[in-house]
Image (cartoon, helix red, strand yellow):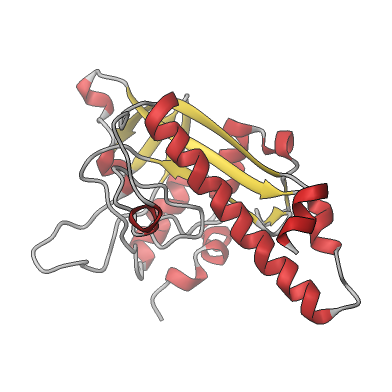
Length: 227
């Protein structure tokens, strides 16, 4: 099936390296402010409570940093294949998801080694890539460190994802469904983490920074709210 898909369809990816700084728990990318959430659950005893903005030079430093933004997707027509054959339809959906992730992996390697070039000497095997031995991270929207799906609207301002066929619903979901977007950080100490459950105080603070109502943000962060 993969060989058949390869004859008729493409996997597409787009990225942009942005001038970046952090300001408290916000990222400023090419003049667009990305409010972020700070970790509430300790990853390890004695470790810091992390926010993605921690991996970017603060605005007060007077030094501009770099952060990458990306999106990857499949041809939309792939999602309608084999609709009358449940087994093949499920298989093509699974392949679509893996192809979007694979395109992201390949794009990230290209960015690290050539475009951004902070890891020019990187020479990793496939198994090493799969366990993320490379420097830096690329949290996608929906990941535990970037749980707010409405961030897709801000990423769309940066990337214009229509260029590769991605559209957003009114809730920020991506179509085609086999799509992924997020941010790329190069800091050697950058690591993945889970924001975890947040309280009403952080929800209010975040909604204020997003310029949205608490109720709207409550909808996007339902899985992260304390019971």
